[in-house]
Image (cartoon, rainbow, N blue to C red):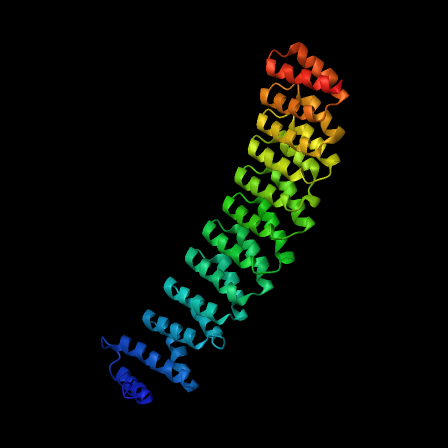
Length: 362
């Protein structure tokens, strides 16, 4: 009957056979076929056949329940969510519970929020928690945000937590930023911190800048710390110079120190010079040379004082850079330091440079 375009007759005959031979080995497949035919009738506008799909949800046979859920999902589940919820609450088969959540995802029904909250709070199977989060993509209701925030605090699985973060990223930045700031400050999982930082970099606000400034001195992962400094470099007008000085004083990585120095390059000279002076106390010559190059770009009387301090440094390259700079801007303030260098320094190239500077000073 179905093949010749008479689906209603096919349904009637199938029902007759199933009642007559309920225990036959083909009975289960017959029930599945009945649901498929009923779904086609509903698609064609004959809604009275939806009862077959709803009855299938209550079947003891897993295959029949699954086919009913698939059919309802294809038809749209907005009007049948209460029945799906009841099935989910009683269902023990993970595969069917997953399929119910897929149906909910397709519907985007906000009625599902209480169920999803319960799943996120109590479910043990990771794949089901992930699918519950997936369903929230279409629902998009700010009311779910506190639940996701709590879920992030309690959940241990990184994969599922990253999925939760992707849901939060869909909402307004002013609404979500505090959650990501909390992750940046307190989270131990580096993947989550990266994800939070990536999101916060897109938000130009004093609140975010303050959070990064407070966090970066304590961050142990160098790559994350470098990214934090990169974020600060894009908002130099909001950066706290004392924070950068703290990094220079306490940081071990020369790369991080140089990145911190690069942030202040575009600031006012009166802000830059104190940072340069801190950098000149560093043990790494590359940090000190970078600082000297910054001072050379500034020029003027302020930078002279920096070079004078550096010409008696313990590192040869640092001395050379400082003397080269003083050759360009000879100043009387350098005379005592140059005299001290000539008394102690044995390297002829350095002595010759010192003499050249003194001769320029006159």
